[in-house]
Image (cartoon, rainbow, N blue to C red):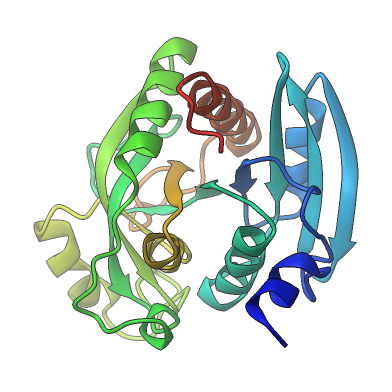
Length: 254
């Protein structure tokens, strides 16, 4: 099979082909967040649903934008991202939640990720650990401008992407703070499970990628989940859509 065949056929997991997605694609983990995305557009069409990959494509203020769920963790994210790139995605923005670890971050605030610690192993299948996992500066700029336009408080910085969801949380066996404290001391803002693989794959394939995350209280606090997740997720999706519009205005949707 030639490279041209791979890029023109219907992709095996996301079940889409060229023309099914806009140049900018938002990628949440949960399929339910794609429904939130669709509800915020002026017009939206469900394009595909297979496994954890649910996709809507539509328009907001005349700008085309898509949203594809990728499931939890780096392996399904990597599969979804590779296939989205094959069918024409040029900007991929992760919209997700995270495990906050810095005490100064409050519920209802957001993190615009500038880079990620490669604490997972999926991206090692693509390139060795010397290659950095960094967000594209144009995506970062668009997310900053979107948050400021929408009045959303945000932090800029590094997150740690890792594979073991519970290992650095109160649900872990043993002293989870012993594992967590070095990352706190180094200024890492939060834990997530997808960003570093997204950044690495986007970087080596020459497309733009970024991440915005909604925050609760730090995960080591008793009231870590005591916040209005539903409302904050809606705000985050709105910021992703606004960023897509800004990228289009700046000639970065091709």
